[in-house]
Length: 82
Ligand code: FES
Image 1 (tube, rainbow, N blue to C red):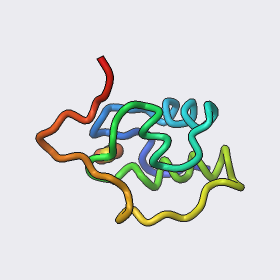
Image 2: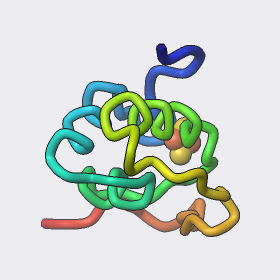
Image 3: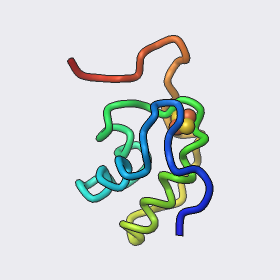
């Protein structure tokens, strides 16, 4: 059961987008954000992303420290692509 935050408010990404990323092969927080095409900013949504991973890929959702995640610079666009 996922409680609390249900979206990444920094990027306006709903939880359904993270679920889709996991269903399409993302296996940790980093690959979830990479699949969506951005990087975490404030990290407040990381527990929500982890809960999605634990619910959909329980055998592949290791405990991670947010200290190891890349964090986007506040003045730099984090969206990739055209
Ligand atoms: S709420 Fe997701 S990075 Fe800030």
